Length: 375
Ligand SMILES: Nc1ncnc2c1ncn2[C@@H]1O[C@H](COP(=O)(O)OP(=O)(O)O)[C@@H](O)[C@H]1O
Ligand SMILES: [Mg+2]
Image (cartoon, rainbow, N blue to C red):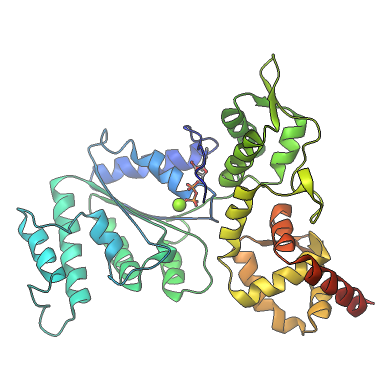
């Protein structure tokens, strides 16, 4: 993905920041907590946690940060090993034991395998570290973490309340992993922060920061297509600036240059098409749904931004019950949403991307078939 210039400030997340700050200060006093931050890609999970933990040193806490890896990894517990920086030999006996286990120089506990022994050692290390100085332990992108890491996160979550430990996890909502669903339940309503799109004033603030001037009406209407997703907004403004599609008036207003319009009619060419990096962002989101679901979504893209699920069934020649799992998955991934009594794409831009990724000839044939089936 092309680099984007992110805003240096966090907008519209004051409540979430205050909540995390409160938890951090409580943890510093020995009353820890576990909190799971959930939300679609780009909604600002990592940015929120980064902003929240900047206060940690002042509150007397040390911060450990690890993350699940999209490409996966052969090494179980890597997010924790990275976070706790236990890859190299050290003067600390516990850390040396862990390094020894990793290198095969130390055998696993009797009756246990290496990952299980490692998990015990890591639990003990977190306890020891938090006894030295309160700990904020972040595991970002849990949806990509290996099962052993998810299990360890759950075990730590159960003990955090009695320790100077603030355990933070972030995750995309995934329908497929039972272990993540279990974490979701374990966290409970009190232990979860659900991040949704930025509210309108925050969107305007963010666009202003990114564009270097208060957005005018036309720019704001365009920004609405991002549905409050900060990554989309960031990409959108970056793409506009790259294409010289933004002008700053002498009064400091950021406005669309004449003739600029994005995310309009899918399939239209020229200024109506989606900027490359924005498609990349959308492709990333779509990449999160499985192949069969994507096929269903392509058919839906033919029907429009909003559509009836019964029409979708007709176009695909499938029964309604057969489609429901795919539709549910797309909803959880933030691709589809309910709109009144029908369904719709959560972002017109997503629909456009799906539409445009089909070769024109395929599109035309589909349209014909769809029209025939619906007739
Ligand atoms: N509240 C916000 N204010 C300003 N920029 C934000 C905000 N939330 C996220 N961003 C920016 O949007 C992009 C995506 O955010 P990120 O935290 O990476 O999303 P996630 O971790 O949920 O996928 C980043 O460039 C980030 O800096
Ligand atoms: Mg992130």
